[in-house]
Every structure is written in structure tokens, then in C-alpha cells.
Image (cartoon, rainbow, N blue to C red; front, side, top):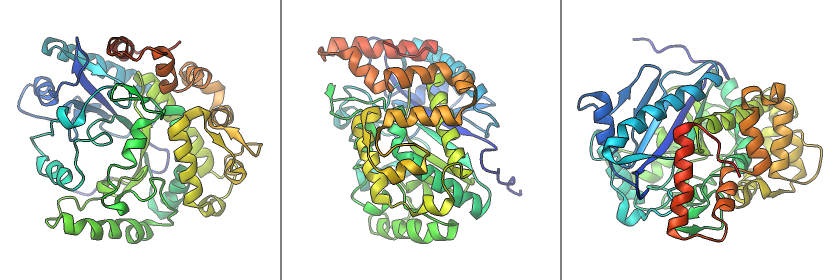
Length: 411
């Protein structure tokens, strides 16, 4: 069969949302994703096709992933669709004594003791990955994200899209950080998921580079400069070639040439799909403005060094919206009329200048994020000075309730 023609940039959207399965009473992780998927499929099938949406698992048994199966032409309808899927899953989990928990990391999971690798289909891949990198650690077993997939058709669209995404990646944690707690205490990072993720595969440095990707001009250049060195370096540790696939690439955004899409991986999952899709909409609007050359031409975008972007990403992983960005050249590329600002102010500028009608359906969730801070900031305020297990359970139970009912977590 002939593959369908590639979608042009911004002609479709793919969203993947990852959630933890936790005990309804204690909120500790429950490794029962396979039981959930079997119940949902009505058979031994471990992938659930519900027409527009699908459910599956990756690597660990306490995680379930939801995605729209085919690219959607607009983001707006997806929020309600994902919310309905969450409701179905929670109803199926209730008799199993479980529920879904949002946010980028579980706040007290012990990966060394609590990790259960997926033992079914694709298990050899996960076993090989575990042998090379070790999955029983934060940044591997304890992380939940939203992946935003944007299509491209041909080298010209790929180069322009990659350049635009590359510029926006460093400030995405300022909008989306939702993982301030690790091992039962504040980590010092607003986006602890990305802090842990950034060091999880350093045994083979070419797999992740500087997290922020280098400039690329076409598929052949990317394959020669990124994929070929990665495959060469992993080969001694994976002689059977089990991991020799483009998804091994752990950069903050990776091209999936097999489906002509660029997959953004730097976004923590939020408290409800409405918040996730609002962040996807804000990110996409800014990426499209860059793609169209609204503030800067392609050559200027591509000329900015990766070191500078990596420094901004590091600051936003640590401080989120409060991170100071004092790279005037970077700010000019994003149309910001100043030499220095906090990341939250930069996002206010981007939303105001790229989203029509004050954000339309995304106005209310983006207002919460821009005025009260990303979810990580709101979690820390809710915890306050009481980081006892009982209080953490109360805060994260409220987050579970937000996911179940589709509400923002507000002060």
C-alpha cells in the first residue's frame, strides 16, 4: 500500500498525554496498565483503539498514554475529546482501586523499588533500553509528558519548522513546568522532570546532545549529523540493533521521518487536558509566527548557537516563568521589545501577539497560567511549608480531582 501524502506544516496536530495510574487511597503508583488495557479492549489486546483516540503504554506498568490516532486539523475539539477518554479510564480503574494522576512526576515514587517494566509486546526493546541506560531512575521511570507532533512535507518545511521549534523549546518549561516535587520534597527545580530527563541517557551523549537540538537544514543533514553518530555510538552496547531507531533520539524535539512529523518532548503534562491543549495552542501559535518569519528570517533563526539556547532552557527548567532571559539577540528573534525580561513576560508577549481573540477558547486556562504561574508554581504554593506525606497526598488528590473533572488547579 502507498503511504498517505505528507501533511503540510500546521495542517494537522498529534497530541500524546501520559498519566500515572495510582492507588485511589494512598496515591502511590500501581503497575496495572496491562490490566486496564485488557479490560478496555475486551480481550488480550494491549493497545486500545477507540476510533478517534487510542490508549497504550510505554516502558513502565504504571503509565498509560492517550493519543489522537490520526492528525487532527484543529486543536480546539481535542480538549473535550481527551477529557472524555480520561473519564472512561477513571471509571474502568475504579473497580481496580486505582485512578489517574496528572503532573510531570510522581511526588514520592521510589523508582529503584517501584518500577515495573512493561513485560508484553515490545518488551525486548524496553529490556535493551534498560540494560544500556537503566530505567529504574527518575527521568526514565518517573516522568509524564505531553508530546506535541507537528507535520512537515519536504526539506524546506522541515528546515523552517525545526528552526522555529528549536527557538521556542527553551522557554516551554516556563509555561508547562508541573514537576517541582521529587522523593517527597521540593527539588529546587520547577521542572524536575526535565532536569532528570536531561541526565538520564548521558552514558551515550550523542543520544541527547545538549537537549536543545543543533540547527539542521534538511533530512540528509540531520541523518548524517545526528542519527548516524547516535547509531554508531550505541552499537557496542546494543549489538543486535534493537535500539537502532529514530525514537532513540532523546533531544527536546525530534524528527519522526517515518511519519513526517516533528515531535516536541519538553512539555510536562498538566492538571487536565484543557490546560494541555491550551499550552499546545500557545506553543503552536508562536512556532507558526516564527515559521512564517514574523519577527526574523530563517537564516537568522538558524544562526543562533545551541549553547545560548541550552542556557535559557536550563534557567527555565530551574525557575520556569521567573527565569531571567538577558540574551537580547534571542529576544529580538521572538519579537520582544527589550534587552532582558522574565520568561513569563516573554510568554505574555507571545500569547498577545500570536493568538487571536485573546486566545479564544484558550483564554481562561492561559490566563491562569500567565497570572498564577505554571502548575509547578501553583503546586508549591499549595504545599507551602508543610511537605508532610499527608499534606502532599491532599494536594495531589486535589490534582487528581482536577483531572477527573476537567478543572484548572487554581489558588
